Image 1 (cartoon, protein in one colour):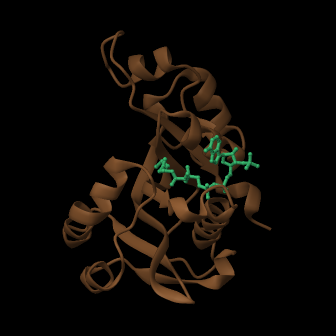
Image 2 (image 1 turned 45 degrees about the vertical axis):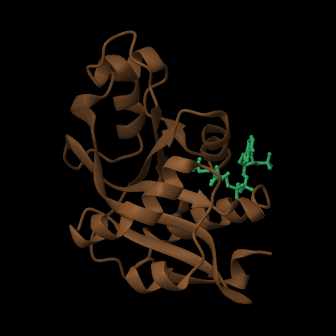
Length: 195
Ligand SMILES: CC(C)(COP(=O)(O)OP(=O)(O)OC[C@H]1O[C@@H](n2cnc3c(N)ncnc32)[C@H](O)[C@@H]1OP(=O)(O)O)[C@@H](O)C(=O)NCCC(=O)NCCS
């Protein structure tokens, strides 16, 4: 199966009541899509979408939420600030670069590791460089679970860590040095896709 066998839908009340419960194998995420995502959308905090299977429209294959965000260079270490800025012509030194946040992202555990998740990430990347977009968006950012599977997944999809080390991330997020980082901030520079 590929993403071509699926249809993109808004994940709204109608989809929630029509579709079978989404199960990506991650209880926090399953709970979010079941109980919180509609309220998020209602409050304009994010927009939730799902890909459903054409041959079984009740079956959600991928679910994700996207929201406007930014990368603030004032909140980055010098080395990362340079790598974020180096590909941007110095028309104007900006303190903040427009981005979109993938707030939550999950793939049905039925089709795990078949490449569908990567296809959906490519789809989202393509969305935000579309010539008809109303606003500019330079980066995709994600607050990935600090677990092997999602971190490898995003790295495989060419996302980089915004902070090179966990210590650096704790420092810039002003967290205590012994705080457990449940997530890691990662980013993808969309400029590489613009022809
Ligand atoms: C992480 C997740 C999105 C991956 O989706 P997927 O469709 O299985 O991913 P793909 O098949 O496109 O895999 C791409 C790469 O991700 C990595 N990956 C995927 N599943 C993995 C696993 N179980 N263990 C280690 N690496 C894994 C691999 O590098 C893989 O490439 P490879 O198969 O060539 O080695 C999916 O497993 C999921 O929904 N997990 C639960 C929720 C979650 O963690 N979401 C992301 C955080 S917001």
